[in-house]
Image (tube, rainbow, N blue to C red; front, side, top):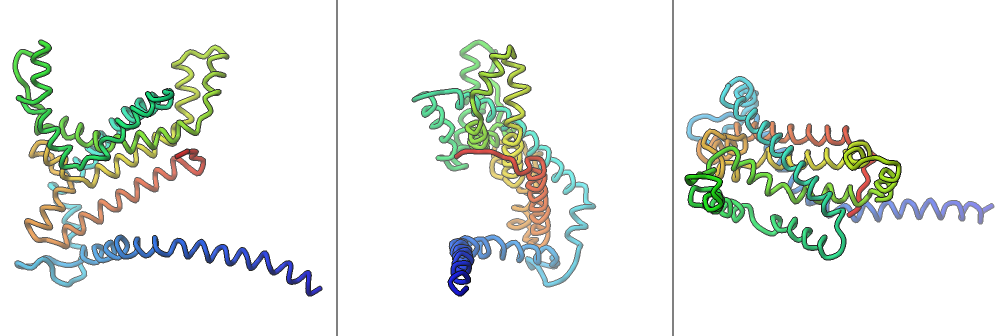
Length: 298
């Protein structure tokens, strides 16, 4: 009886030890997340309820005035709406180009695939400031684009696309594109190519095969790539202000101005908390749309 009891207790003890070992492996990551993300977020939440009086950055208080100001003053609502729209457009453009590029990569073999993988990695190896300087050489009236179009005879005079919404969207898309490509490529790599061959053998034309076979299998990847691009774009401010017009006043830029120019830390914190809520909402919606059946290979 004792031997049986000991033999039954040993697997239970091993399971407990295994769980403790797994938790021990998570402790460093949890500590980093807590120290560098959770605690600053809590401090920022508390700061958003403080007041801004006189020449001080903030004064201790408990007030909803900052959130009421954000929700009632048209200038901030307009800025929030413009940021949301810019993020939506950029995410949509990113997904379209990322899908085409990832599909092309998936269909390639050998060294061709490696070359295009290297091309997709290039934006990740360059800082955002360097990318902005690169677009500054491309979009002005004396830039690469204008001179090339002029030499090809497509335009009669030099043009400049600098400080336009188009330039801002291009810059944002360029930076977020690699992430979308690799997200979608991981989804493509989880698809058995024989399903495409089966559809072709059954007489389905390429467009019908894409619409009824390939697209449904990659829908979850599209949602995740769109969410990633949206989350990244909604919080950035350097690229829109460097490439876009002065009227492109995003929430990210507003936070920067409130913190460094007006020294209104509580209102800047309230703006940041609204952005965090938008990001969390996007992540929750993505989880809802994709469910638990996302298949991917890295």
